[in-house]
Image 1 (tube, rainbow, N blue to C red):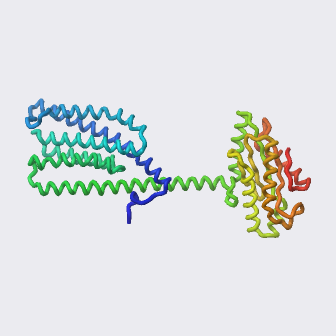
Image 2 (cartoon, rainbow, N blue to C red):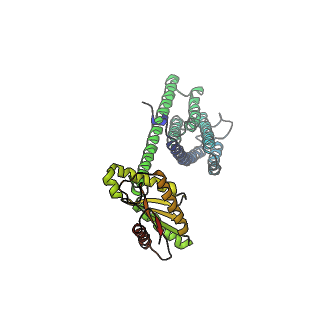
Amino acid sequence: MPLLSSRRHSPQLQRLLEQAGRDALRKGTFWIWGVQLLIALFLLFHVRVMQEMHLLVEHALPWQLSVQLWLMVLLLLLQPAIWLWLRHLSLPRWHQSVGILALVWGCLWAGVIYALLKSELPGRSVLEPALAATLLLLGLIALYPVSRALYGFCLPILLGFASMLLLKTVASPLAFVASLLVLLVVLETGRRMLKNWFVLAVNREHEQRLMLQRLDALAHQDPLTGLANRRHFDQVCKRAIAQGVTLEMPLTLILLDVDFFKRYNDHYGHQAGDECLILVAECLEESVREPGDLVARYGGEEFVVLLQETDKAGGLQVARRIRETLAARALPHAGSEVAPHLTLSQGIAQWQAGETLTMLLQRTDEALYRVKEQGRDSYGAA
């Protein structure tokens, strides 16, 4: 069974993985930088104490170990400036730069480990293996999202530690080589496990987001027609009225009712009635063209259209377009008294200063009622 990290993902999930990987690596590099700085300062302090106690012999080195550690500390202190520059790079170049930076870190630590091995420092047989193991663990924890960065950091350290073979400071070379191979196996299996857990966590977060989006859509969407429901319409309309108060922009509502829908339902059946409402919804969405406008199912066979930045004249044009679009579909309606096909009655009202949503809907409903009294299959404005 393949690891999650090696499976193909959807483009959306892939982008989320890339962003999460960059965030994780950014936090990891900051953490490992701080720990490296502490280790370098500790080694510097330890070496200085050993020098003052005349317990450090550096004849085998062409340089002083303390100078090397001071240089290490100085380079680590310059890292924040490099990070500020890396922030502006694209993701591929950023990964490449972090890989190079990790390689530089690894080479510097390999040099420190080699220098410690060449120096006659008390406790050397314990210090170098502990330092190498600690650095490898730090690299695994911080750099696992990008294998290039992880191995760029760890392989030089392993090679520096392997210099014990050249310096002949190990009792059993074969056992030492075997231990290095075990370290490599542990490093790779640990990287794969951490990467798999990381992908699993991001995948779960992605699924939760999708579920929340679906729940949010269900909370604001009519399940039959796919239009906005009454609750969502009320929220959007109240915001539009508040915006109209502030910016003095026109706002118009159209309230629509399917003519003789009960007769249609009784004659053709409830399934045909549902298909009828879906057809009306399609006609409304086809007729409303501005991105800021909203079509909603208001309840039963009633629909409402919110036209933002539209006055009453614009509302009349949209109502005419709706009537023509539905007439072109020519859905038969045997129970209608006004036409052989399905028709709508539409009431139109433009929002007036000081009106609440309830007041605006009441005027729109009155306009719709007058259209019904006058014979239906028409539209009229309040």
